[in-house]
Amino acid sequence: MKAIILAAGRGTRLQPLTNTIPKPMIQICGKPILEFLMESLYLEVSEIILVVKYKEEIIKEYFWDNFKWTKITYITQWEEKWTAWALKSLDLDDQVLILNWDSIFDAVDIKNLIHSTSSAVLVKTVDNPEIYWVCKVNVNNRVTQIVEKPQEFIWNLASLWAFKFSPTIFKHIQEVQLSSRWEYELPDAVNSFMWEDDVKAIEIQWDFIDIWYPWDILTANSHYLNKLEQSEIKWTVEQWVIIKWNIILEEWAILKSWTYIEWNCYIGKNSSIGPNTYLRWESVIWQGCKIWNAVEVKNSCFWNNSNAAHLSYIWDSIIWNNVNLAWWFISANIRHDNKNNRVMVKEELIDSGKRKLWAIIWDNVKTWANTTVMPARIIDTWSMTMPWEIIK
Image (tube, rainbow, N blue to C red; front, side, top):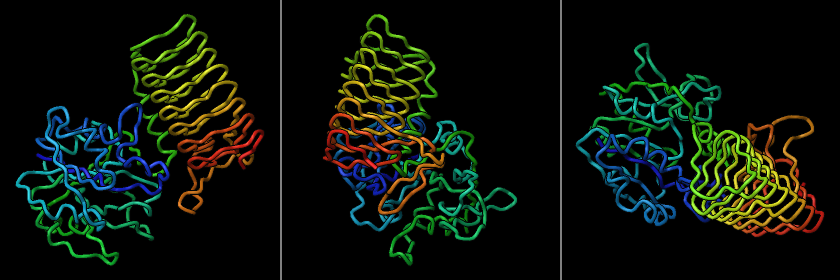
């Protein structure tokens, strides 16, 4: 069996983050999201085929030609004609998995798909089927049709873009015609395939996370940190540090005296935490960060080489590369009306689904003293605030 992972997309809803890295290389708890998917399936397949395009060199430099001795082959999707276009050149003679990289599954659910005795698709019961590709099923739990984002209710089983097929799927992929959107769409091939082969719907048993928007990174961090059953401390913990629950402390990182860590957290290489720092509730600090005196960080993510030097409160936030937060940097993460926070994405106001969400701060931002940020605000790349400024 071989696995095909569709990893060519740019991720426009995650811009400007994806201006510098491809979406599959966004890191969760120290690993690219694509790596978590590979870990779930590499022992079960003879080859992993990665369909790439946008900033593909970053993916290739990270994984090279194998993943833990399982061969990796790269296919470049030269034209933006959607999923089936890149697969038209393939004609495999073995069973195949076709997966989208940006959905995080539990390894148990991936194995249930792999060991299915027939062709199959992972599905999930959802309350909002209108935003998914929806599977219609019959009384025998066989999929009869996949419908894109139906405006009227037809079923509530969402396809999670994780398929297992017999090799005849490639005949149907090669026969796919341009859709009304001028794209070669994989669901068209799947609907054709189902006329001659059964496709079983397998409902997932565990969590499922789509990385569509920046705040989904916080959800994914929490998902993996919640599974941390014991601490992995690889470097220095000074005296009078209090650690409750479990942490990962990578090489050359240091926890200085009087640091207090509550709930599971991750601290990356070369980062320095403390003294007198309060780190809590599934926070993630990447490489080369400095979180120093009298700073409280809660349920937040610091990317590489970002600093919060002293006397600041950072809650429910994403702080990207090379950001410097000056003293008395303060966040507000809850609206006065207690409703979900909404964020402007691609000129559209999106409900984040989160009651607590503070700031999304992109690369190379510098703040001056006493900056305050209102809930759910985005501070764009290379921005600079003035002293006592309020970001409304």
